[in-house]
Image 1 (cartoon, one colour):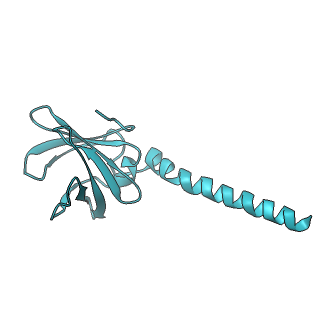
Image 2 (cartoon, rainbow, N blue to C red):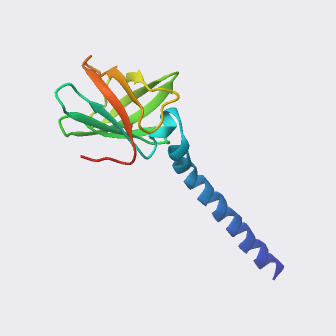
Amino acid sequence: MRTQFNVIAAAAAAALVLVLALSAPAALAADGKGVAAAFGNTVRSLYPDGRQQRLWLKPDGSWDAIGRRGKPSSGKWTQKGEKVCLKQVKPFAAPMSYCTDFPTDGALGAQWLSKDITGVPINITLIKGIQKP
């Protein structure tokens, strides 16, 4: 009887740890600053011609995006100081990374100016939720 209780208690403790671990990224997204604020939210880049690109960063270092031409892409991201660097894997592996500023104190609603990989000026906004086109 005592062994059965210990197994149930251990299973309950493991379940609690799992719930806390899975809810941590959501908590970071809700209260996070900088890159953590992007988890579970949308990073939107607005181009001068009115087209938009949407990017979704994940806590595991991966990202998904829909480009301004409506094509999906994905890859891996890293943080280097106040910059986020993206390395595309799909639809093809890009031979280089693209790095852009990402304010360390940024939160939902933050806006900043940058340039895309070709040098075109873009206005970046961190928008609440996953905003798919």
